[in-house]
Image 1 (cartoon, rainbow, N blue to C red):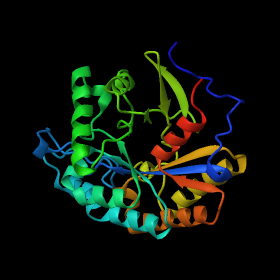
Image 2: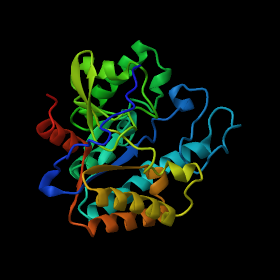
Image 3: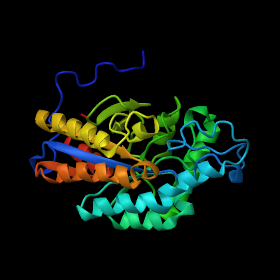
Length: 295
């Protein structure tokens, strides 16, 4: 059986976060707008993943102009609002970016990097890697790396697929040689090591729990819903001590004014505590490599 259903169990390690922090908080900002399925890019129809459209566009043949504009809100408006809220509080984040999205709005790449964010590769396009052939997936990863070199000025050190990886994704990342970690897992609240072809590889789990996709699914309605959910998760983890909290936001969702208000309240709640390390995912990886090197 290839699944690990045990993990750390009761014997969870002390992560020894910098400056004795009780909690490491990483905010991932998903930059996908312009990389989704599009007729202009040769797809049969438009796609509106995680927008206010919901299933409204299911019967639109070919190009869906409403879907396109709801996606574009994230890169035209939402990103800049999310960036401002973080910068006002001197907080960094991780750009979980599709390479094509940055190609089509390179100002976002420059602004995020200048703000001290790190980069997590999220595909070349907003592709479902589990539907790709091995050759297609390898080409997708290689094309993304080359593109990031032009828009971000550097390759990503970590990777996260849309929803889930293929059975070969992790092997392809390790074989490529430049990835130190991936986030294609949801099974823990701390980084952990795994073996890939006899080589140690670090996994930093992502989240579908502390994720604003709940707006698109109808599970959150107001900014208060998001604030309450994120605050409660934060308080439980901080009280326990020694955990990692990942929050995932999409500019086309959280970037809207009413939702941004809830996000701002959460950031202010975090800022009121001086024992929390708000950091990038790459910094968490660097810390784990230094402090918890396997063997």
